[in-house]
Length: 135
Image (cartoon, rainbow, N blue to C red; front, side):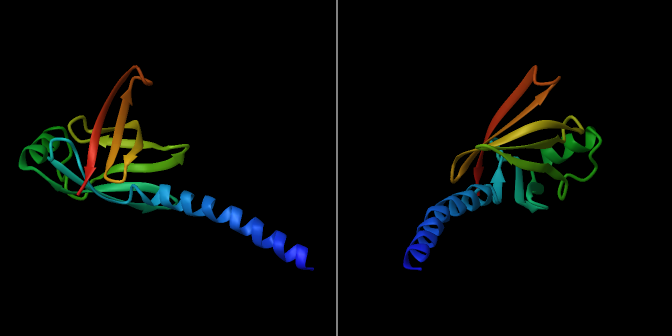
């Protein structure tokens, strides 16, 4: 009986760090982020086991550009859609207001206050990356 309890305790102790790390990596991206030009702020949050994010602030210039591209209201618009954890990054759809459409994208944690957002078009032939920072 003592051997069974010892084994159960050791097995649980071995699993605990994996669970903590998995939770930490998925929660690290939750928060408020700004783009490199500080013209858009996005609040990210869990949504059905994935990651989503909506615009909570945008400069007048960004709002005008979004309106001209067919997005009448930028504040409240969901930019990050259904980002699923895939290895060290999340993969989903990124809405680009200046283009008026969503593109396949990845979000990768650089450190606790920095993430790389990379969107691609034409099945990955044209890609662009930005470094976003936590507010």
